[in-house]
Image (cartoon, rainbow, N blue to C red; front, side):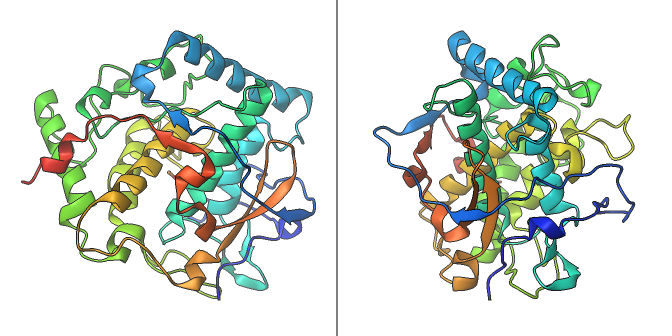
Length: 343
Ligand code: C2O
């Protein structure tokens, strides 16, 4: 059977995943009744831009949206659209605050399995709509951090302005721009060598090391499964590398980006994941022999709960987010030089 959506009223303590330490945070969301979500109609696809290329007009809207989300934290801490409430979604789904329904001995965990891509796609989808609602612009889109392209292999500048609501001081200070990100954990020190290693690592996790659907998507995870059956190549590779690279080594658990419970407190998290989401969509379009679809009903019917932009708690299924264009967005077209980067 598929993973069931969590019971919010049974939400409990959060623990650090690696150590099992109890965390000093309550990441449980407000409790309310849920309804099944229906994707709304739209006229035009909204195009998520590459974060290093956005216009100042776009940036002003994005900053205003985040400012209003952060203001909700103070004005109404129980508003599920507030910045901290949104960050806590990640904590609740990833740090053991939820059990699988009716299974006290099994945590619900959305990483390290085939739930990774669909969970984060839905999470970003509602985050984006909430920002749009708060600035009264339903066409708002999140920018993606284009770390797979040499032009995007630094922390995007818009996140590094200390006066901007997009800034987070809980980041590795040695990795502020113009430091080049290391996606392949290569430890190389020459910028040019890091870039080349990154392109090779991307080719590997998207193509060369992917011999089956689960190699890329992650292992099956069903009702009654133990958590963490296994990550796909993308989750384990560039995805984890970016978290580790941005997280602040001065903090115990490398908060913010270096730990599940705190990652969503950095606005950069959502742009990182917008690119992870883009990688999923690119992979699905590759003309390789590996089948791109998972037809298992336990995958398609796995369900999550999120608050939408109107504070309505909604139930969504993995199978309803496979075609992102039906969700109303696409990605700005940028080059993918790693596609031809066979080692
Ligand atoms: Cu839910 Cu990048 O982790």
